[in-house]
Image (cartoon, rainbow over all chains, first blue to last red; front, side, top):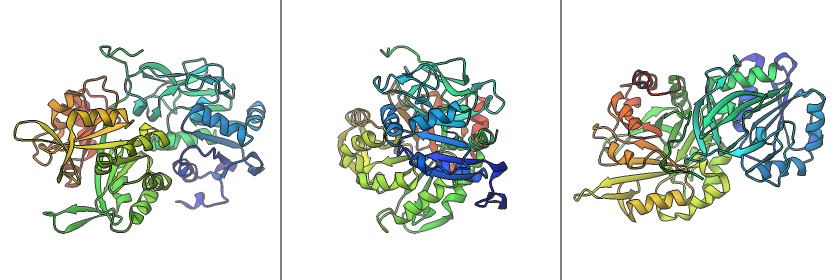
Length: 205
Length: 261
């Protein structure tokens, strides 16, 4: 690690809080954020958030209902809605992106954060889950024609805020952006040099 | 909902997976089943393959029982904090507690072989707890004198008391995400992958199939993918420096196969 990555010296004053919803291993995403040179903390509950955090990063794995339930149980729902409402930056990854939508076919009774309209749907392909690399169809220079690593059986449908698209049985939304709200269905932290650069770019922007 | 005769559109591309044998935290190479030659540090070698364009790495701990997995767990943590592509780890995994430790250390997937045959319920346990994407079942298959397929365990040394097709079906039913198919009658022969066996799965087989065993050169990768392999795993030809991952990928691209480059 270079000197500029040492603790306390953050990249352009950016501090990232990774929300730990007890939903998958956070080691790779922590490494990705740290090697990008950002100051970082991992938080289970909102009252642990440092004052100087300016990016919330929400990874999620497993079932939609589990992740939504963790958001409610740990007291994140109102905090996240207020955070995004104030125009502050939130990045959801994998199921952490799916819960930004209203609901999911996976658990129809579970209430998403509804920061984006639409319902997450099951991908109609005989090999499920989708596991592996796919080229992104994106107009964003940060993602255009790049290969990303996916692990998912469900995904959000195409919409106005979709910034990258991929086909697996159905065409789905691989990345989404609405102002300062970002979602990535793929795993940037597992998508090689491209993914690491994307995390740095989006956190810094 | 799904039609077995339909072709489903997919942007997924075939993966190239170098496999590293490790023992006590070092990459090793066996010599005539006797001594092991130290080949280097797992993190350095994995990073070298990542830079060459590997899509994933598999680590097989061939001495897992010696130190109760601690060296393997330390290695997994080091790999997880230094690699930016997914990786699987196998060798000596027997219980769900073993699996918990490997995932806690940062592994993306675990690979089971002998333990899966001896205790098939473990496949279901892992699939339920971590999702089917987290479990790869290694199926070692050999052809007997009658040309029938038989399943082997213990690194290919013991014939298992289970029929080939029944075992494939059970692995799928119990929720494995991928099958790592090693054709022992091809392994090390340098005569290519068993493409006839690979093509028997068909495009709509519900789990991904990784072809392993027999790769001699770039054309073997083309043939395996054309036969339907979702990924191709190889060891020797990468470790011996005969081909880089990038050179194999270039050849695949020249043959109009979509590859991450």
